[in-house]
Image 1 (cartoon, rainbow, N blue to C red):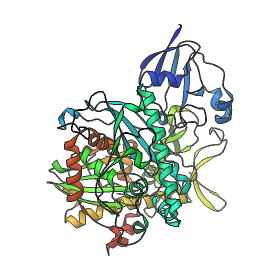
Image 2 (tube, rainbow, N blue to C red; image 1 turned 30 degrees about the vertical axis):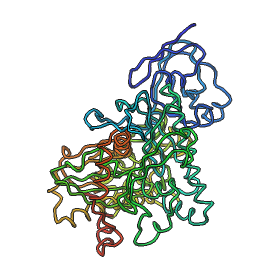
Image 3 (cartoon, one colour; image 1 turned 60 degrees about the horizontal axis):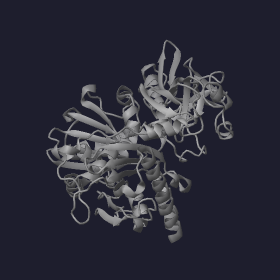
Image 4 (cartoon, rainbow, N blue to C red; image 1 turned 30 degrees about the horizontal axis):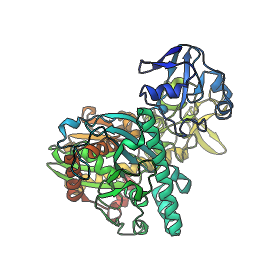
Length: 535
């Protein structure tokens, strides 16, 4: 049977596929990470790739419905629909590889988790799930040695009931049926992710005997069917902080009914098992020097760790860093402007995948505001200088042009408005307030901080210099910062395979001192101060 060779950029990996199969099938067979939210049915855009060289089959009806004509002209195709007609060079954009593979050494973690009868696991698989508010990330592991066989991510479909945890809690409080809807929505999404992971690794779901799940407190409670009403009112206490061991069929997982599920313990009402997983992954219990651990998301959790002591807070940073509430905001996917520079009166930008711009993602917004600070276009209060030549007025509102309509995919000017800057101010101020509260409570100054670990998908891609310039991060030498990607996923993988990691998770959850920002009499004063843009 005839075969074709596909070279995937930018990794340079090569794979061989049988003629007539799709590019997605080729990726699955060769364990090349690519997103496929709809499972390869051509019903979404998540597996979009760009054909750089070679010939593929003609666009299908699904592709003409879901891709713009200009995208098709530029070589963009859906991997689940396009079939090679010869050797290819294919570009996988950033959004097709949604999560980084966690880096850890399972052989150093101690005793591998055994089954319910204490037997050593053989030829068995397990899944680690990071259930986020906006995204669900999943990893399939070999339970015998802890190696990661496949990983993928998908949007959390609970978003149809609200973008943030408060709106979902409010919906769940409406009726018992509403809470069940949110639970079922999550379990169906996780089931789909598990089947995708198994397909990518070429294993049967029946071989998956264990699972570990982390999530913020609200996501955890909704998945486990626990009451959430108390999370919406002071003192914001979780129904339960304990870890949970439960059969998968009792949770409603149809893909792995015979598996056992371990859910990580919780620290507080708004610091959940996902942050426990982060603290496990970075070895927080063993940190000696004063270290800040910042897990950036719609809700940002921050911990101050030193000498085995850990104090944590949660900040409602909002969706701005993921493109939410920004006029031309979007997630970090193909066509998103992710890098902006302003120099000599000119605005320059870079897009993910290098094509025409569609909008601006969080890292692009952060860069833009940092550049505007440097160029004197925006003052410390966040107000745009209407007298600056790069600022124009539209409908009486100030804005700066980033990309003209003649260059954008939608044919519309892509701009950053005064309102967009206000949204970024709120997000960065929430994070900086959390940091300042932790430092003040510990009686230490910024220069005492020896290291800042930044976790989370967004945190992995931000320019640290921009984060410092706008005042989101403390003004410290860049060598003190490190970006570790999805540490929550890594920590969950560790608790899936390692009994020692589970013990650490339990210890962390018990030992962490949780500060509730809303209880601080100086919170508003610190927050207003943190709204200022600049170091």
